[in-house]
Image (tube, rainbow over all chains, first blue to last red):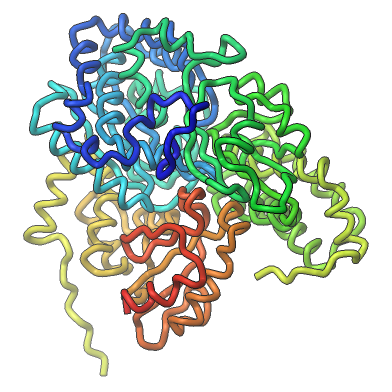
Length: 426
Length: 164
């Protein structure tokens, strides 16, 4: 349910049921709505049994990578020899994505409950919830919810702490986030070792996204079979997912649909379509890091992990950015490249130089000073930025550039040929 | 006049108590670095080199190490800013919804003139930032800790009046 909108009949409202409901934010209100029953149930189960239920449900990571959650939990050592940790990735900052913010604002206890269940499942005593520094409102709401839940003693021996980021997109990368909690620069680490072997403070760690953890209590109370049954297309993509729709649509917001839902319906029905008199030009369905789709591709795309791959893109975080026919794709791709140039941690040369260089070339093209070989240069650069670095920030910069040039080449060529009025970039 | 002002430590009394409470959450002192820097910024408005040295001393790391961390994160101020520090999202989704117009209106109506510069009356610093994570509520801005959604150039005058 895309607060502030009413649920659309085609939505499957699970995580977003209480969006906009002030009372659901309080501990008492949450308990009244069946909250913390799943945690009580989990605490009576053996940790491995909880993991098994999540595995069986088919739940996959909602932060972007889509890794099976239960499988990730099962990688943790069965026999606990040193401290185990849970990290919650609430560093939501992928352009186009604003779903975790809504979960934290309206249903903070859903996140806390899911986090505590995860901690029990992987035998962790401590969980850190890493909230991006700019999310001042979600922070305050979470802090209050945590104080109330602690006062009620609902977490038993498990300790939950909030940790505030300080402005760095890269800290949404799992190992950068761990470095950041450790009081370091947010540089991603080379893997392996993977977090389940050596994560936070060098200890076995599981890290999950906010939306992933918020789904866990529902899976425990309603059962893995129920969750698995929520599937419109590929059986490997189960459950509901929040899609944050933004840009050129009539009703931007978060819509919760069963995986396999047609992107076309999300755009034209749930989000109300483009502004009057406008038509769809392009859509980025999974946050700015995934390839851009043109109109035909968007209208044929099914929203699940496999459907998006089949359409030539990725489901990612579910941040749906919509561009109508008034959008200047060259300018918007430059803005995205600039984002990555700004957010590069600068560890790897390909990324540090590549993101900045890509941005400069795009700015030059926009200013009417592009050279005919610039498009080839951009593609060549992109190739050298893909699959060659510690993390995928560099790849994420290349994705919109490569897909943009492929699908909207005429717009680039118009700037190069002097057919478009140059844009002075500030 | 070359009077060196005596340094007033940040971590005394209540602030020190808060830091100690934070330190108890982590197995290492260094993990309290980001929270400690937030405390400094809350108390002083920005983080000076001398503050960084104090943080380093309290947490057992070098001033250079602290500086390395401070400079990595965009939200820590390394110089004084205006009374109202305004962050405007201008990344693509907000950009196509008119974020650049919001920046322009803010710069003009606050007298800050240039992004990052502080207005002559010391009240305003306007900066463009990358994605604030509220793309469906374009354009979001942060005025200090207040997150304001759906800002348009037309709404800027009212915001400026409210915080002036």
